[in-house]
Structure formats: structure tokens, C-alpha cells
Image (cartoon, rainbow, N blue to C red; front, side, top):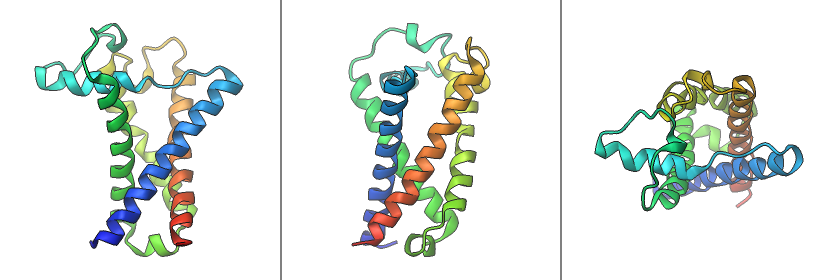
Length: 162
């Protein structure tokens, strides 16, 4: 993979993650749906090397210095990694002729990572099963990942303009 392709994937991943964040702002303003606190992601990542992978309730776990920066950085890095994985699955031809269905399918499947890894480790249970509004949390996760997919698609279209 050459540097130009890598740069395109970087832009696409960042663009898609920005779309996700704008969606989070929109649903918070319109429907009072709180967004994920990415400091919790940073806390989780920073506590892993100390041997703490699974939490009863990560929000109740002590603050870790640098968690906000690490959480937001990881959020964007994960977006780029997902874009990279998707392009490697579909092939470079998708970059020059993006199609919506493959990225929506990939994005829908990608929600399995928070459902079966992140949420259980945060103390929320598998697919947010321990939360009082589990179905609402599941729907939010699915919608957020689908918006990420739309962001990948839109970002790829924009990259093709240049």
C-alpha cells in the first residue's frame, strides 16, 4: 500500500469518526440522548496494563491521568483502523468506486466489538444487557455504527473529488 492510499484511508477514517461525533451531538441536542464519555475508553485502556480489563462499573472506577486524551485519541484511531480493515476486505477498487451497501454491512457487523468486548468490560454486560435501558443502548450503538458507515462512504466520495 502506497502513502497516498494510506493517506486517503486516514482521511476517510477521520471523516467517518467526525460524522459519528456530529451525530452524537445531534441526538443529544434533539432527543437528550447522552453520548459516550470517551474518557471512559481512555480509562479502560490506561488500566489494562495495570491488570484491570473488566470493571463492575467503569464510570465508578477511579480517574486516571490522561484518560480524556487517550480516550479521544483511541476513538479516532479506532475509526481509522476500521476504515483500514474495511478497505483491506473490499479491496482498493472500493476507494475509486465507493458503494454504500458493503460499508453499511461492515458497520453493522462492527457493532459486535462494543457489544461483546467493550460493554462487558465496562460493566454494562453483553450488548448492554445490564443497563436499565438496554434496548435503547443497543439501538444507539447500532445507529452510531451505521452513521460511521455513512461517514466512510461520504468521506470516500469526498476524497475522490480531489
